[in-house]
Image 1 (cartoon, rainbow, N blue to C red):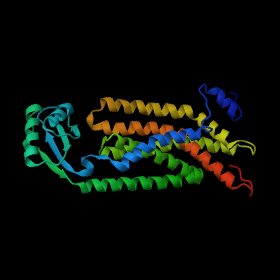
Image 2 (tube, one colour):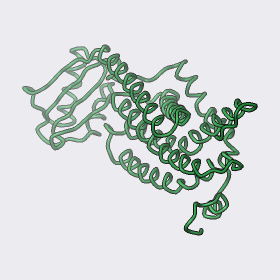
Image 3 (cartoon, one colour):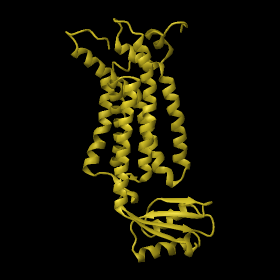
Image 4 (spheres, rainbow, N blue to C red):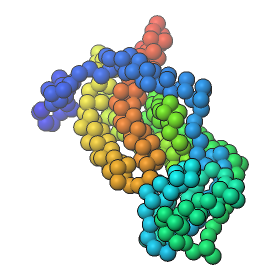
Length: 314
């Protein structure tokens, strides 16, 4: 590619051997997203989410063992008495925080006896036994929703100031697309969600907007250089391809790290890493195939609505 002048659309096409016109196929991407979104939304309304102890309440045992233990040993022991739930280890794998359904005295004693027999002896004097009420889950849900709404509001303000309001609307639609797909997948497959799932959703929300802003920044730069006869569709497509390598490389790096956490991180991090894996992948997809095409669609509709009036370039 020549230097000393802005890259032309033809020059950008030649750089990428796998080039295809993303913007002209935007209705394909919209249809693909709907095919993924609709089953998840139907599942969400029909069967809801598989709420964990953090949301519906239960028992929480804080046990200090006399020697290091493993999550697998504790999980297997819980299953042997008909219980399940997340286990977190700390203090050199000698302390375990076990969360499970609300336990009656008899079931609690059965679990503790099984842990002492199958895992290791524990310090009975430091045993912590707390019950988590469903009210805490309601508060967690409410706070998460408020966090999402506040984040969306601030993003709209920031993107509007830095770009234009239509950029902000396009970005928020893409972000909602990402969140709904992650939530829909967990509902459809009935994977249990806990407080780490909320953290993953908020993290995905912040990560996705970063990639979208990078593409929008290139669109803004190229839009300023457009001539009256230039096609906005071609300009937007060129902008996406100019940032394609960066978007893919960044997302792949994050996905590899998350996959490592999912495989080797243990039971306590699986839900978080699984939600993040889905969210980062969908976020990378939506930044390229949803946010920018939605921006193009809005811009073109705005231009059509102005026909017959004063010509305004979009």
